[in-house]
Image (cartoon, rainbow, N blue to C red; front, side, top):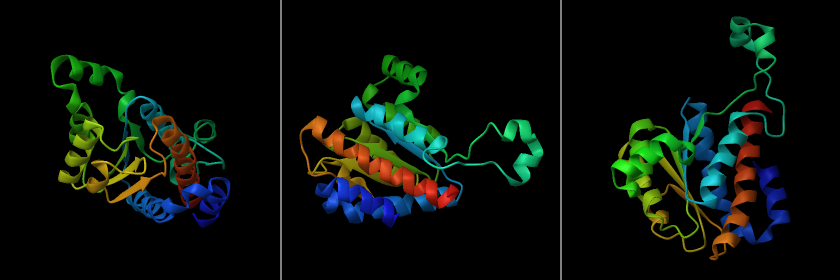
Length: 203
């Protein structure tokens, strides 16, 4: 983790204030994946796109090769194993279009992510909630449900942290307040997390 974080902070020195929470977030994620748990992600707008981006970096090779070996390779054979890549279980909740639109049509859409966390989350899993203000209602409700289900909660917000900060085991509050500027700093943070996790499990 330290080498990837050092490179990130060299390129984005304004993120030094987030160092401890980035490290803590990485530890929480590593521990969950090590124990066979999964990551659920939620956010709105640009942050919804970030959820899909993060899940994509975790579910397939990002920077290093993730070769399939061992008993699973033997079970499926070389032809299949050679076309698969090691994966860390991550689900982007905003990308579940059918259930999100059905829920918004039938119920109070503010609870869409809370419903998905209730249905998909189990003790030991992690919720990563992205909200530039920290006050997105549906993300905060999802965090409340996650904690009630025995999940850890990691937040990525702007500098105030908003309401989300108080619901998190670790909250990475990048030092900006304007939405697009917060989102610009979220990207190097989650790339650093994904690189570190990939190195830990597949390096």
